[in-house]
Amino acid sequence: MDSSQLGDLVVTADGSLTLKHPEHGEDYHSSIGAAFESENLYLGRSSFSDRLKQQDQPVHVLDVGLGLAYNAMTTLDRWYIAQQAGPLHMVSLEVNKDLVEVLVAGKAPWAKAWSKRWHNFIGSMGHKNGQWSGQIEHPDGSLADWTILVGDAEVKEIELVGGRFFDFIWQDPFSPAKNPGLWSSAWFSKLRQVSAPNAELLTYSVARVVKQGLEEGGWQWQKIPGHGHKRHWLKACIKC
Ligand SMILES: C[S@@+](CC[C@H](N)C(=O)[O-])C[C@H]1O[C@@H](n2cnc3c(N)ncnc32)[C@H](O)[C@@H]1O
Image 1: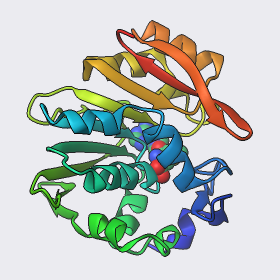
Image 2: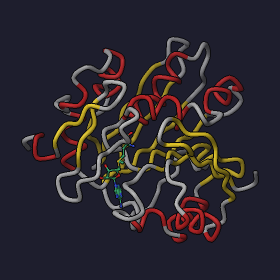
Image 3: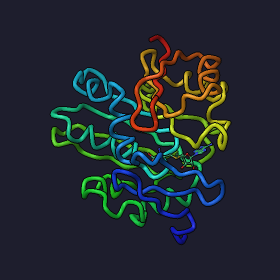
Image 4: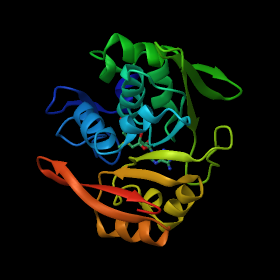
C-alpha cells in the first residue's frame, strides 16, 4: 500500500515523527515527542531496566497498540544496551494490518531517521504461521523474541509466551473518546488475566473513565509525573 494513506507525518517536539490518523484525526503520539514519550514516560517511569538487572526470570512485555513501534523499539533498545540482560519476550497488538506491513517492509516514512539498531530490530521480523515474529540476540548472548499479533485486541486471544504472564504493559491505544473499547473494564480485566501479580501497566491517559475501567478491571492506579503540558502519567498495578 501507499504509506501516505496511513496519515500525514507530523514532527514532534524532539524531532521524531508521528502520524495523524487519516479518519479520526488524532495523532499517534503527543506533541512532546514520540521517542521522548517512549523513553521517558513508558519505559522511564516503569521499573523495566531495574527488572532486567535481576536476570532471575525472563521479562515479558505486552505492547498494546504497536502503532508506529516507538514503544516496541525503545523496549528492545533498553534491553539491548543493558550490560547483561537475560531473555525478553515481547508481544505487540495491532489492528491495522497496513501499518504493520509498511513497518516490517522497512518502508515506514516515520522511521527514516531511526538508528541502524532500530532498523535491525525491524529487519529481524519474518512472517511465519500467520504472524510476524523475530528474534534478536543481545551482545551477552541472551535472546529477545518479538511477536506482532495482528487483529482486534478486544476480541483476539492474548497468547502467553511459554505460559508466563506479562510483567509490563504499555497501554497505548488511541484516546478513550476515539477508542473506548480498549479502556473499558472488560479490557482491563482481560489484561489482568494475562498479567503477573507484580505487573506494571503504564499509560498516558488519566481520564476518569480510564481510572474507573482500571478499578473495575481489578487494577489499582496512581498518577505519576508526566512532562510538559502532559502533566500526569498513570501507573497501574494489581497489588501495589
Ligand atoms: C496511539 S497508537 C500507538 C502508538 C505506539 N504505541 C507507538 O509506540 O508508536 C494506537 C495504536 O493502537 C491500535 N489499535 C487501536 N485499537 C486497537 C485494537 N482494538 N486492537 C489492536 N490495536 C488497536 C491503532 O491501530 C494504533 O496503531
